[in-house]
Each structure stands twice: as C-alpha cells, then as structure tokens.
Image 1 (cartoon, rainbow, N blue to C red):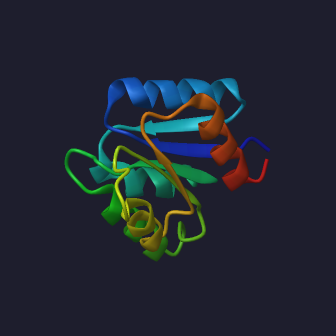
Image 2 (tube, helix red, strand yellow):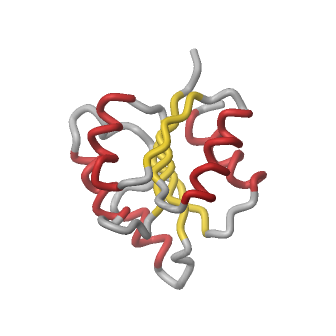
Length: 122
C-alpha cells in the first residue's frame, strides 16, 4: 500500500521540491500551502506522515503540530518538522510539541529521504 505524505509548506519552491522528491520515491503526496487548512486536509487525506514547515505565513507550525497531536484521528501520525529555526533549543522546542523528526533548512535530499523513510517505516 502506498504511503501518504501531507506536505505543509508555504514556500512554493520548497513545497514543489519536497513533493517532487517524494512522488519520485513512490509516495502519494498532498501539498498544502496554507497552514489554516492543514488540519482539515489531513483529516481528509489521512497521511502516514506530515512534513511540516514551522515558519508559515498565517499560523505557526508549532501550533499545527500541537493540534495534530490532540486530534483523535491524527494523533498517531508522525510529524517531520522542516525549518529554518536551527538555533540552540529550537529542535527540543519543536520536539516538545510533538514532532518526531526535525531537519534544519536548507535540507539536502539524502537526509530528508532518510528521515521520511525512518518515520514511515520503509
């Protein structure tokens, strides 16, 4: 069964890159540019993984992760946070709200795919 990945990223170039790489690796991908609709789209798509940008335009990725983890349907879906926040304490703060994975931008394809496959069990 094809694993499904929701990509929440408001930067068009990053979202396209993530989606293209994931699609080429055999994943079903649902891109989301607007964080305000991320939870609703996740409930419809029921992903095996959420790739979450932390610095979104309208809403914090941290708040979205917290909302996912409180949602009865989505609580067990792992989250890979991908962010430019790479300062001291940022990774721990992101993991504390529920993200199972963390990558600092700019992201290289190798580590990105390794993190994705580790979180979806491939």
